[in-house]
Length: 95
Image 1 (cartoon, rainbow, N blue to C red):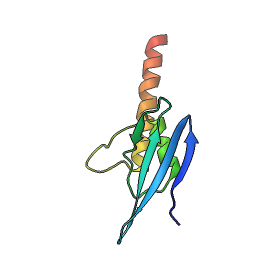
Image 2 (cartoon, one colour; image 1 turned 60 degrees about the vertical axis):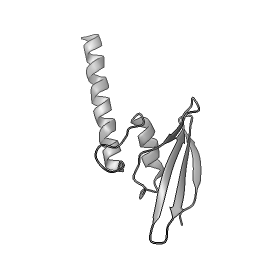
Image 3 (cartoon, rainbow, N blue to C red; image 1 turned 90 degrees about the vertical axis):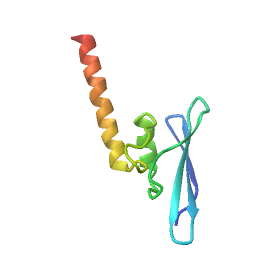
Image 4 (cartoon, rainbow, N blue to C red; image 1 turned 30 degrees about the vertical axis):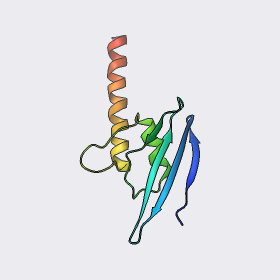
């Protein structure tokens, strides 16, 4: 069911690697940025979800908000906050 998977998203090489433990499975998320920098995506190890990795890239490689790794809804929220800040900055330039 869970297997290693690699794909390209916006010139990033993305990879999810399952770690099979005796009582659960954790998924580790890795990204190689366009400049070659290797990143560990701070995403919940219980998410086997390509879209979460892609959203993490779109959000600008965020780190955890509280004690745990990011969940998908938190990444979506960060993207919304980022877009609001960009809109405010653009309106200041043109206003």
